[in-house]
Amino acid sequence: MKATLVFLLLAQVSWAGPFQQRGLFDFMLEDEASGIGPEDPFRTVPEVEPLGPVCPFRCQCHLRVVQCSDLGLDKVPKELPPDTTLLDLQNNKITEIKDGDFKNLKNLHTLILVNNKISKISPGAFTPLLKLERLYLSKNHLKELPEKMPKTLQELRAHENEISKVRKAVFNGLNQMIVIELGTNPLKSSGIENGAFQGMKKLSYIRIADTNITTIPQGLPPSLTELHLEGNKISKVDAASLKGLNNLAKLGLSFNSISAVDNGTLANTPHLRELHLDNNKLIKVPGGLAEHKYIQPESGTQRWLMSRRRQQPRLRVLALLLGSEGLQTWLFTFITTISLQLGLTTSAHLDTTRKRRLIRV
Image 1 (cartoon, rainbow, N blue to C red):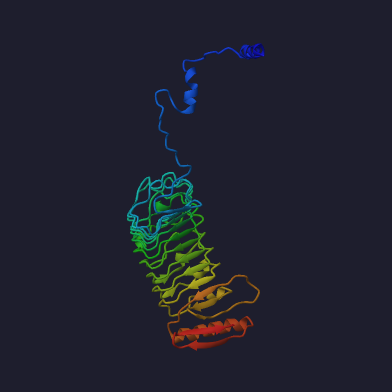
Image 2 (cartoon, helix red, strand yellow):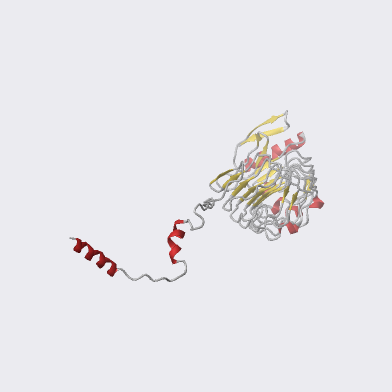
């Protein structure tokens, strides 16, 4: 029996291959693999890096949306997650946007900086934002629009600032822009460079309300469909001011000082659907309204309606505050005559408290 065991042990040793030393540290492989060296039996385990981006302190992060609003922040938080698509920093106390504040945010689509105290934006602050489409800068202390805005920008809202100048160079290359909001700024007509908006081929909506402009800005792009200029100091609308705006569908001129609209002015806007002229100084209805097939005069809660049944798919609206009884009588006669020509019946009554006439068709 003992002989048999000895034979088996010798056989096993003979079958094993010879040991071959290939390097100086072959005998240390086992120790290194275990993480404990011969001279460092209690080596410290290194700290593990986080698997994903860390949300800034006090902010909330979910599905690539970083919300840091209403926190009293005086600067943009550091180390924002690089996969952020929407960054909300509104209602804070940020005073300046610096270069590097948005570094690595290559996927950011929307940046909300509303209601801060921003008075300065560094020229290169938005350079890293290669996909930015919406930039909201309203309710700050900006005196000019920022330079070098991303070429991908589609919507810019900067109302309720201290902007007094709009330079053409600011919008150079912004060919994707659709919406611009610049209302409630101390803008004057001389502060808007001629043709400042002209290069933006997709621009559809402009709002410059509650400013100090006295004329309609010149060189507006033909792509424009809505132009809102309410609450300014415009005194007259001439034919040249609307020239080339063939696609304009809505024109807001309420609460100005307009006393006249030149003949032929509305001929430049063949697709006009809504014209708001209430609270001005008009003494007669603008010429050219009869050429528009659909007119729905509207003022406050009162309405006048004229339409040609089933002959024209477009609806046009006119908001016009009547300033005198003579103008009311003229307009009543005008609408009644057109209605009779169209074979429509009308009923009318006068609201003497508001000096408005309501005509129903």
